[in-house]
Each structure stands twice: as C-alpha cells, then as structure tokens.
Length: 272
Image (cartoon, rainbow, N blue to C red; front, side, top):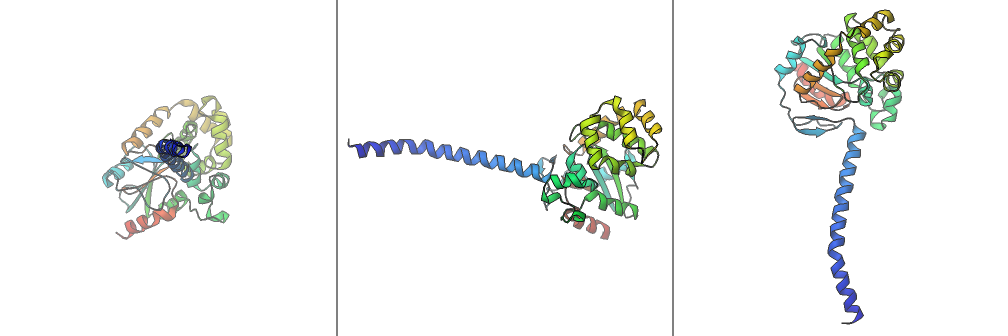
C-alpha cells in the first residue's frame, strides 16, 4: 500500500469519531446557550410541566383554574380587593430575589445590571415593571391583588415577615417599596440573610415607612414564622417553583415579564 493510500485509510478511520465529537460539542453549546438565555430573561418557574422565562408569549394553558385563583382571596394571605373583580392578579415573590426587584419597579440599579431587557422606561429603556401597573388597576378598583411568598432566592424570610407585620397596619406597599429598592436588596442579601437577630437592623431601615418599635416587636414575636410555610404550600399548589411568578386570572406568566406582555390578557378580562 502506498503512502497516499495509507493516509487516505487513516483519514477515513478518523472521520467518523471527529463527526461524533462535533455533534456532541454542538449539543453542549446549544444547552449552555439555552441556560444563558434563561438567566438573562429571569428566574424561571415550572408551571404545568413547562419551563419558560421572560418572553412575549405566555406558557401553554396551565392546569390552574379561575376558581383556584378566586379562592386565594379567601385565604390568610396579603391581599387587596376580593375575588369578584374581573381581573385577579397573583404575585409569587421573594423580596431577596433580583428579578422580583426588577418586576417591582423600585430598584433601578438592579434592573440596569440584569441587562438591557430590564431597563425601566423611566430610565430610557423599554421594560414596564408589572407590579407598578397592577397596583394602578387595584387602586382604581378594576383589579384585585394577592401576594404570596416563595423562596426563589433564599434570603427573603425576614423581609417577608416584615411585610406580614406591615400589612397589619395597612403599610404593606410602603414597606414593600423600601425592601424592593437597591438598599433593601443589599440589606436582605448581605446583612440580614434570614438572621432573626438582625430584626433591629431591618426595623431601623424600614422606619420611614412603619414604626420601628412595633416592627421589631412583631418580628421578634415569631408570630409569622409558620406563615412562611403556609405561603409556600399555596405557591406549590399553583405549580409554581420559582420567582417571580404572576397570574392574571388563570393565565400564568412565570418570570419577570414586562407588563406589555400581560396587557392584552388584562385588557381582554376587563372587557369580558
């Protein structure tokens, strides 16, 4: 066999393994790219067996019924309005979750850091924070809203209990807006970190919104320790496994969607 024939035979033997390696590499790159894409779009939530992030199209029809969403307004949850309005919003959230902060519309720094898709309209971007728009409809009496805790990031327990305490005094949104600010995010994730001994630091931070003595006493009492688990159980019953997660009636939007992606669903419900 000539040297030319030997080279041809070797090339033929090496070709098949090289093709296999190229196919495997292409698959791995595709999977990694998908994961990066998901991270850029927000924390994903698995609903009805489907994973999705922030996209212009909601997930396929969930297995959640409208009656299940209405029933939330009869449970011991933070809520505004009742289950009889045409539009019912449910937010599954964690005050330590960065994408929840983006959706809240109060943390301009984190919205910038998450990427151009989350740059707020007020900062020259295109992202419309959904929570802010929901609140407008709730305040006008056109919609109702329920807030449910789920540990999407891991450091939100003390912040959530502060929200429960604030709700007693009609100060939920006041405390919410401080917690969902840049300073609130830093405090919960880098100082408090679910540490009950940090109740004083948390109460002091929130004193512009609520009496710090009341809040510290409420946090130290442990009265809402069990409530965290109750909220989580309810969130799981809605097939939510991440934050943020939103419902517009029975329609699910798992991720930090811009309100522009929810608006057509909201408008259709208002006209029904």
